[in-house]
Length: 127
Image 1: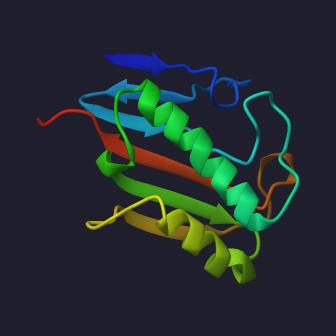
Image 2: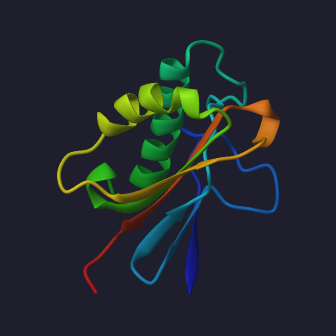
C-alpha cells in the first residue's frame, strides 16, 4: 500500500507524480528544484536556490511525519559540477552525523532549465 504526501508548503506536483509517497515505512520524495510554493522559480544565487530546494524537501518530509534526521539516501542532480562545492556546503548544513548515503550526478539538463534537483528517501518507522 502507498499513501500520497501532499503539502501546500512545497511546489504542487503538476504532472503524473506526487510530491512524495509513503510505503512500507519509508518516504520517497520526488525530485525538487528551486520552485517556490507558489510555483515560481527562485531567482538568485546557487546558495539561495539550494536553500529553496531544501525548504521544499523539508516541507514534504514533515508532511509525511519525518525530518532530515530520518533521511537515509539522497540523490543530487546538477548541470554544472563547478557549483558542487557551494551546493554541498548548503546541503550539508541541513544534516548531522551519520549523514545520509548520497550520490551526485552531473546531467545535461533538468526540468524548467534549473541547475539543481534533489530527491530523498527517509525511514518513517522502524521495521
